[in-house]
Amino acid sequence: MNLLVASEKDPAGLNMARYLKEGLTEKDNVFHGKYYHLVIISSPVVEADWIDDMYDYEGFVFLSKHYAGSGKLALTCHSTGNFSTAKFGGKDNEIAIPYPSLQKQYMKNLWNNRKRFAEFEITIEATHHGPTSLHKPSLFIEIGTTEKQWNDKKLCNKVASIIEETIRSELEDNPVAICFGGTHYSKKFTKELVEGDYSLGTVMPKYALDYLDESLFKEIIEKNKTAKYALLDWDSLGKNKHKLVNLLDSSDLETIRL
Image 1 (cartoon, rainbow, N blue to C red):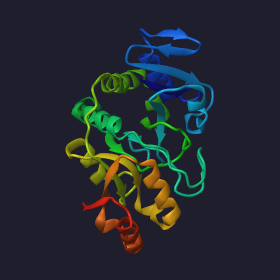
Image 2 (image 1 turned 180 degrees about the vertical axis):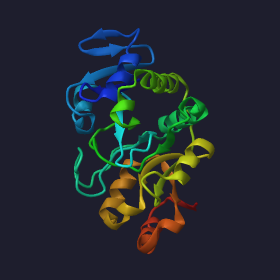
Image 3 (image 1 turned 120 degrees about the horizontal axis):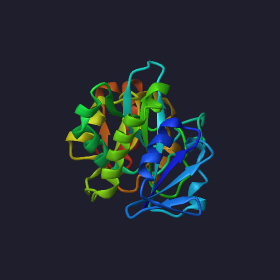
Image 4 (image 1 turned 135 degrees about the vertical axis):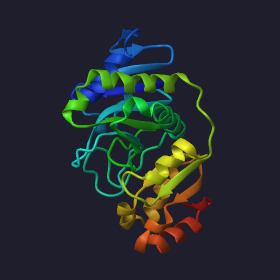
């Protein structure tokens, strides 16, 4: 059973939560259903490192708004973690446990419904922000990119319906890969999720590779226990290519160049 989490301070998350709690039974501030439970918290979801101390579930799905300075409309999802200083929740140099199977199924379902979201880019994001200290897998699902979209109840309901479809379905057991390289919105890794064989764990983009050292690499491996592969956006690795290859050679991961 997964716990869906939204913040009352986040209009997109709150709108999705309102749709998803319909028909659920509330007890002790938690909405209970057959396929998932849901809670609405007062603090921002990026700061919810405390949540699995209070609630014991198999995994956590955070419902959130997405902001981008470009203003480009996007529907996104991603795992969480900080490759360096924690600026938006979580701890410094700490990676959360990803939720690869759920992320892949959600992205495939979203992609299969892309005609309903013709104005939006459908993409994963690189791993970023908190929470980072949860002991169970977690996933952020976001609606972007301005207040107009966050407050669009029809849009939020459509996305929430796909979340519900995903949560209710039996998740596939795909091989898990950690990803290195590419941009924050990686077209290669997104394509792998919706068309390829792999589900994805932590996604470390090119701009974060400067922070990669033995300690951080060990942290990534530790939080991706089910991963057997490393997917590399090879042409984007730049000056950190040699360092990354040496670290991967010291691991048990099978490396695949994209």
